[in-house]
Image (cartoon, rainbow, N blue to C red; front, side, top):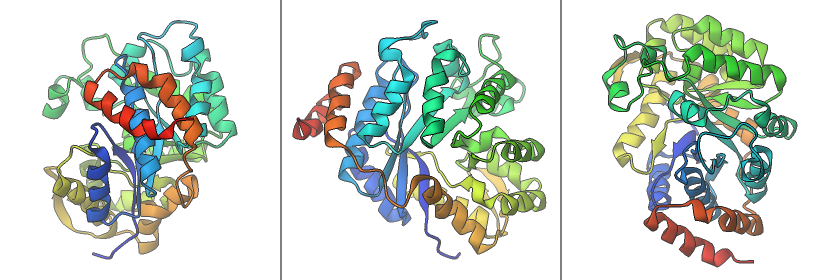
Length: 351
């Protein structure tokens, strides 16, 4: 298989050992760079913990990009959030400190249920307006596969992870899409990449319509377990799609610091194999057939598109703004080991 220059645009971090684990992953997978995606949406300090850890890693590793997430002091969100809830000021502080973009998990059904606040609510207008005006990249997870709303078709892993939404308390897949389209119509120049292909791997016409309607919308190829199998059901049609929209697609893996190193590397290799060959093989226990795209298309997806949106190098960390975030958010970090790790890292960035 031909060697390509690769940036993994969708990586997660969870533990104090993330720096060494992700450095080793980048090196063994032969990645040019990787992009950390901090996640929030929980009232247990997750966003503060992951934002502070991601920024610390970014300050120590020149090949790490990072997308920060919003902090919610408690859930559900009040009807008229103010003060620490000011989402625009949070985004401004993240970017000022050195984050390269913003990660949204707010539209995943379980998190959206906890929030109790639609993403097209007025409370988010200033936030999305700022991101649109400043061309800040957004990586946004919206909904989940349609099978997760059907007890008869929900896969075993969805049941095990409590990702089955059949009890009537979760928003429907269409309701989540409706919120997002309302945001896009209000902010049509928003530079957003939808994770996991916006869960449209069975709906090429909807994917085309989305990309044609919103020129700054891209799709990330981070695997949902069903995604590459769905593409393989009609490889010729999807090959034409990938060639036509090769400048709107991004490689990502969902790898994290806790994934076994060999498994993480295999995920990158399998995505490249799918893009660059016509091989029939097994990917995450699913039958897959490669699209055998032209080399230029593979290279665009593997690295070039990420650089067009994020730049050749990560945004530099501003030590003073970084320390200000630490002072503002450390109190939300509940895990003692993580708190001690962050205190040790940030003790060198006073003033």
